[in-house]
Image (tube, rainbow, N blue to C red; front, top):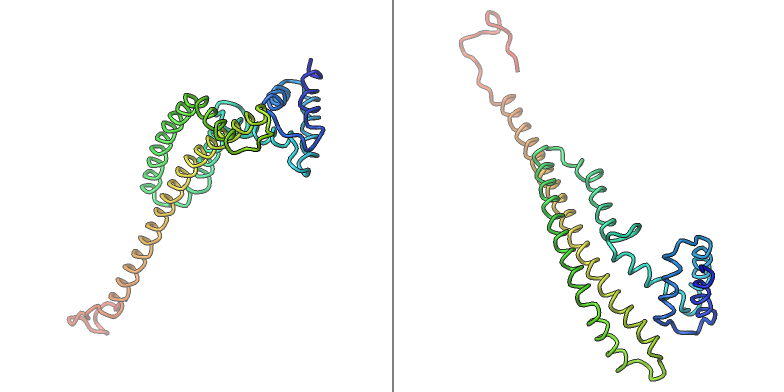
Length: 234
C-alpha cells in the first residue's frame, strides 16, 4: 500500500518542468505523513536532489507541507507554539539571570507571564479566524489566479498555487504574532537591565561622594590635642 502511495508523487515529479498540482501535493502529503519510514526517506532524498533543479513539483510540495505543519500548533516537531516555548525557555535561562535585583526579576516574570497569556489568547483567535475563512480565502485566491495566471495553466495547478498563497499568508500572520511577543519581552528585559545599570551608577556616585566629603570635609575636634587626646582617625 505504501509503495502505491509513493508512486504518485514520485511519478509526477520525474519531469522537473512539470508544474505542481493539488492532487500531486495531496499524494505527497499522504506519503510523508504516513508510517512507512523507507518510503518517506526515499521521498526526502528525491526532494534534496530536486532542490537544485528549476523548481520541480516535489520542491513545491515539500515547502508547502512544512509550512502547513508549522501552522498545526498541536502537531509534533516545528510549529509556532514550539518556537515560542523555546524562546521563553531561552529567556528564563539566559536573560532573566541578567537582572540582579529580585524585584526586577519578579516584575519581568510577571510581565512575561501576562504577555504570554495574551499571546496565547490571540493565537487561538487567529487560528479560529483562519480555519473559518480558509475555504473563502482559497476561492478568492483561485479567482485571482484565474484572472492573472497563464491561460494554459490547469485547474489542478491553479488550485495548488491558491492553497500555497493562503497557507503562506496564514504563516506570515503567525510569524508576526510571535515576533511581536518576542520583541516585547526582549525590550522589557533590556529596559530593566538599563535601569539596573543606572541604579548601580547612581549608587556608586553617592558612595564615592560620601567618602570624599568624609575625608576632606570632616571638621576637627578642637577639644582634643594630638598628645592628650585619642588618635585622630579618617
